Image (cartoon, rainbow, N blue to C red; front, side, top):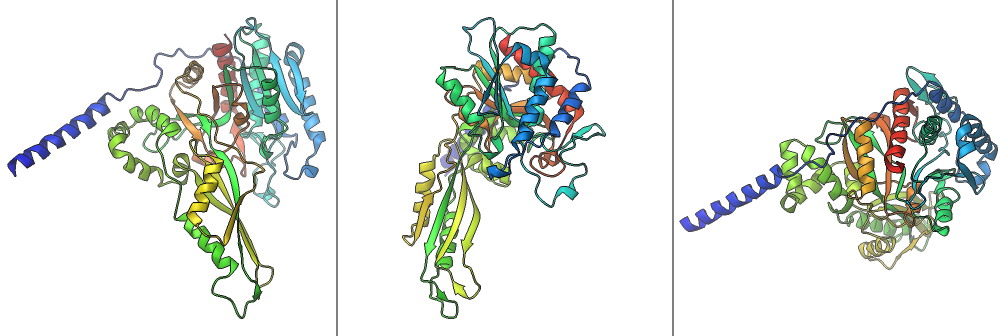
Length: 487
């Protein structure tokens, strides 16, 4: 018995030693000694330009008949008048009338170009909520240090910020060594087929390969993340895929006074319950693993120890992630029933009962894999399962944080925002960046919005706004990034 206890003690000591060794050798990936980016003179005219851009109702509707194309044309005329040097010195190509592709030719055509992108369409204001806005959503009101209105966060501020940066660089006589493309879509909010996708297809057909693509997606989260109070710059290195499935159960119908043991609604409800009881497997590999490698060394000792020793403590970390909706979404393919249809009258049994379920697919899973998982989980011949197919998108490839392009982006962020912790992360929504997978291995998603949890709720929500100083710092960031990447 003594030998057994001694053996157990030695084993425990060995495990503790390994845990501590891994923790103390878990080195920071934050770039050190990054010189600050040079200041640039950003006048209040830039704020006025953003305000003016908000006043164009470039709203994308799923029902195309509701879209007012005159507002889109007016917005493009506004850009031409507001940024004269860009429109004199860069080549502009219009894709499907309202998609914009600018080319700023570099002096060395042997270098792969870089591309900065965004979109200028916005989501509608939900009918009946206008009265909940402190400032009218399409007036671009400037007050108390903020610009208010739909598009200040998603995503006209990116478009105007990039254009302000390029116009500034042109005014200084700067000429890039590497060619710079600017791509601005007009239908990102309705899947980007005519804008972002068409622009990417145009470049692909021309054989263009890009050194760096930067779109919206991540932000600077000023109140940090769980366990880390420092502001965190979240740089999307991938985004989840998308599919929706239709589940249909069929019954006999008839009068509700003599219901059978199984109705179509019973069968469908059972199928939905089975699916919820069989979630997709959670994983800390891939993009989340990369994020933990960047965040872990900056955490307090306890969290750092757990992250440094995922080989042992992965179940604990998964439990922590799944405590929040956002955390759970980052480590698994999600299941979200969104539409239920059955019945037309309270005393009539429906023949068909249907559910639409939306899935956001983790890199490593696939649209086909989701369909197979659902069929196996439900395992009921009385329920048909089919994909809607219209917007099916596979998860994007994962762009490496070890690539030189990411390191240049990392360096730029640290030079403009020296107090932030930079980390890769997974974008759980969808952006136009997903269409550029064939023209670049280095597709990243980041806009230097400085937002806390409460601010993030304004995106697509009520009282969307951006702080004027944040917008001015964005312009500096884009100018610095162009200098760092295009040289």
